[in-house]
Image 1 (cartoon, rainbow, N blue to C red):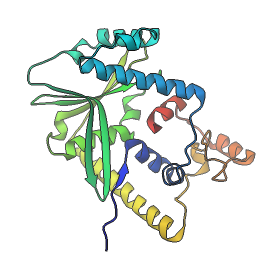
Image 2: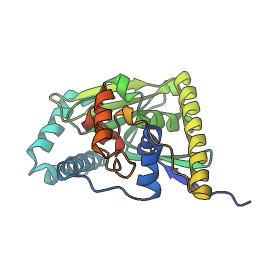
Image 3: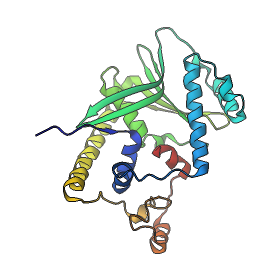
Image 4: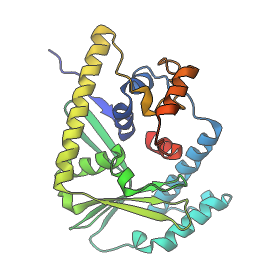
Length: 266
């Protein structure tokens, strides 16, 4: 029997798979993702430009032409330099790498992480991630997101660093002043994430086998979870009629901030 081809998975795909397998099916297997609305596209463009500026600055390239006509961008960069000068200090025995890629295979799936900034010395390693939406999230929220879990897990899985040497810091660069949330890693967290990831991949194996051999759709999230509100696939999933939306609104008690959802899902 031929080995199955490696399937690439990212943190955003894991986030969607865990939240709603049927959305994963529509978006990634059937390639049905609609374009973002104009306001969302503007936010994405600003975020991409900020990441480019930070990469070029780290590489010693000029950034002034990129920020000259964007006052918000210029202010964000200046505020970050004031808030965290130690983040940009060049220290001996320290390796700094912007847009640092890392890949790892597990259970027939290939995972890729791209760290906005990777800072390592002989005793510690930091993953830095720039967040460009305007409402910061708490550590309790971020530690549950697959970006946090996967990025920390992959770095420890390579064996170059122990979990206790690793941390991940999110910088929310559009707040005044910029705010940070740092999440420390541990062997216990590493084991827990490994089990979560293994279980999720086993579920994906089952979904894919049933989808390919029997034409069965991936499972759907409960309508009372609130995730169908605003989802572009609601009508396709039979969740787009008025009665379903009323049911969701009646049972929904805690809707996660939509700006945060957009950031995680990209």
